[in-house]
Image (cartoon, rainbow, N blue to C red; front, side, top):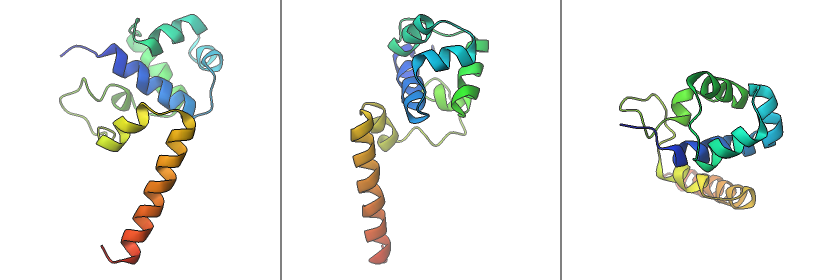
Length: 113
């Protein structure tokens, strides 16, 4: 199976935004240009293994979190429908969905479900 560059880029962008890092800051942390990060996030460039590891470390996620759709065996639990939904949301949409999910979970717990 080959690497899905678009999905990889979306996940990197998602975790970068979640970490409140700009593309410039991430680029500085991994010692590459902002343009290189832009191309990776847009899915037009696949990072080298060393850059991928640097990105994972900078974002405090595992490499298999970033590559989950490419791995046959992954210890990541991120390959869920809710996770994929959040990847396509902006920051405001993510916050609303997460808040609603937490409230729904609390309601289910209170109902004994």
